Image 1 (spheres, rainbow, N blue to C red):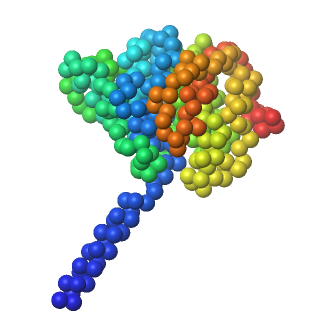
Image 2: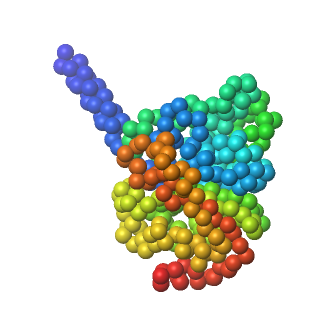
Image 3: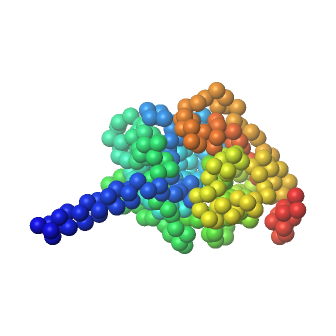
Length: 316
């Protein structure tokens, strides 16, 4: 009898520990939220609101790159709406890349069946918005690796041939010489690079993008405001330390891109979403996504890059 009671007590203790483990808050140090689009786009919404300000000429027939693609929903929408020649979505989290391929296959199957376009809320991103910072996994800093697509009868589909995804740490990767893109998008990612790799990481991001763009190419950037940095600075010891040492604020990005990196023009295209609140109803991160507060369209030129760029920027 005593052994049974002891066994029962141990079983209850194990269950309690399991429950506590599930309830324990998990952290997303790179912004690699599992339910990012569930937060960003309201249930029943067909299209990411940011698509409203994107221009067809940036993407149609172009080779494109989406840095920090998460579960790939906006990557797929860009390909569908604008007819890219190709678009590669990269993300630091292999789980999100797997989600992206799942969403791609789901979209292709639906399209092939002749159904209506899949609503964003129907894709694999449906965790409750309330769990945005409570569930998910922490991605690792392992070397870049590509996630292969599973065999499918839909391999001949145009969308499958146009859209691809890869696990990559963009800041720490070596990009093949000669590989360039016509359009690069970087949406709500710069803060996480900035917090994890500091000012040097941010400048590396901008320089690498500049190098990867063809002459006349387009860079679409959505930086988060400084108050968002404050809200997320404690997600890891690294981010906390970098936050204290950051010298470049988001309001300086335009000057850096124009005067130091070598971009020719910067245009604020946020006005196209004035008054729109769709998909921006999560109070915890509202400050991060205040109707694309700083969404820029950036055009490249044949301007210069100095080897002492980062050191010079530190003197600003």
